[in-house]
Amino acid sequence: MVILKSKHEIEAIRKACQVVAECHRTIAPLIRPGITTNEVDRIFEELILKHGAKPYQKGYKGYQYATCASANDVIAHGFPSDRPLQEGDIVTIDTVAELGGWLGDSAWTYAVGKISPTAEKLMRVTKECLDLGIAQAKPGNRLGDVTSVIQGHAESNGFGVVRDLLAHGIGRDLHEEPNYMHVGKPGRGPRIKEGMVFTIEPMITEGTYQMTIDPDGWTARTLDRKLAAQYEHTIAITADGPQILTAQ
Ligand code: MF3
Ligand code: CO
Image (cartoon, rainbow, N blue to C red):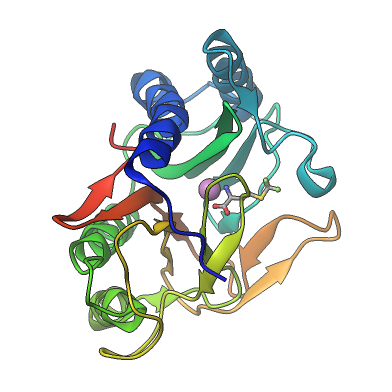
């Protein structure tokens, strides 16, 4: 069941989302060769706590960190580590903050120094997929209108769309309905309604969309070990259209 949110509740969710947005704004200029994702994780956690919020991912289903740090062929759920990021890496930082019982969720892919033209194109197209998807997230449309533009844009650029990890409704729980893949057909799927709050978080791959999970039980990698990128916003559906609650 989709849990619709009141305007008042959406404002409360926005506050949690803005803690996450501030984390991303803070880290963006700091991502460069030499920094470790453990350092990034610590910065996120301290900022979240400073706002009186909680790093919701820490302890979630046994996950140990405030952030997921997913470099290069890692699609999602990578562990922060002491490996210094290297020139040419791309790394996705994903976090969830809980404030006043409400959750905000946003992931962003960062370039480390100068990256390859392929990595640059993958990041650009993935961000465009997110933006095109958001533009379709308006009352009266269906979820297939969102997912089909994402799939169409990724595939027409020669990239893949991960199917095995899902976007989700969000509110007091991290994974509310609708849970959905970022592929589909226009006019299909659940109707988008005012008061819905959900993530759009396309994971786009340089090669195959198929993935593997490492023996650690979390780290999702591309099967062909080529690159993956992801941009994620938490959005609210209003009568006027989508609002990006995690806008940076
Ligand atoms: N932030 C993730 C999402 O986009 C969830 C991460 S799973 C966790 O759905 F275990 F790391 F928290
Ligand atoms: Co996320």
